[in-house]
Length: 167
View (tube, rainbow, N blue to C red):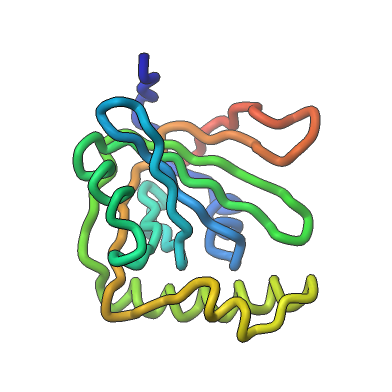
């Protein structure tokens, strides 16, 4: 049985700052047989009211995930600091796939700069990160999600703890 989470008011300011800070971002969904699909994101944007998160992906690299999101609308996004391993998971029902807009492209550029800096700080050359992400600005797409559940996933005794939602 797939667990559905009720809509939430959104995320708090600290969470919005964290998810757009250059952390590692992955998003997952599932098909009708509950088989998972996972993709690495190349950025995130949070709406002004913090009710929606747009995770950015390269369409050509994420076909299975995008098909699953379009079919079921279920997503879980994981945001993880590569240095401290602080990790948050945000789930949503009713997610949708939309074409990237100019603000998404700018967010992907900003994300790339921040992610390069975070990986450089732990010894990965900027050239590695650029190739690793493989961002094609002409093929960007966004998965728009309205957070309905949030969890701490930082390794340790608090992993899996549900966070309260804040407007």
